[in-house]
Length: 113
Length: 114
Picture 1 (cartoon, rainbow over the protein chains, first blue to last red):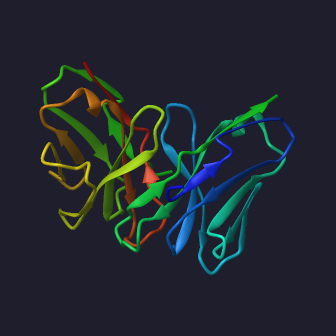
Picture 2: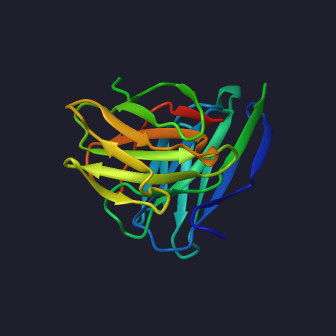
């Protein structure tokens, strides 16, 4: 798989349920970021986890990072219809220092009211 | 809350025409970027810009593309002689510092080349 690949590609759940999305990457990283994109809109940064961190929380979001497996997960707890969006992981590309991020294909999350 | 603004939100152009997409980054940010997203595909890095020059560019960013910061607030992407395959959403982003931290994205400019 390419750098920053998410799975599943699509996820459909009911409001109140938890949603888990996974991301795998290939090269070593110093951080991994998750972004959200509402349909036809711009990307919004959700959370950044550094390579020396294993878990990070922000509100209803919980991100884990396993550098040995080169994988990360994003958990959204108690989902709401407003969480319906595409979610992307992104990694800095090969140690560059100029904001060149490689994005995954994304997970399309649909939360049904 | 400060935000990155982009204009136009949608532009339709004929193949071969020149297009300029405009962005106003967040005022105290120093690093500026253009990304694009072809419909149904990944968001792809095009170019980064710092201190009035290109810091890094991707293979996509060939001689057809150029960027400019003509004044203290605007950051533009020019596409010369547009092709059908240039149709995409173009996102401007900025960040307060270099490195690999958070990027702040605009809402995008949708370019349709006919």
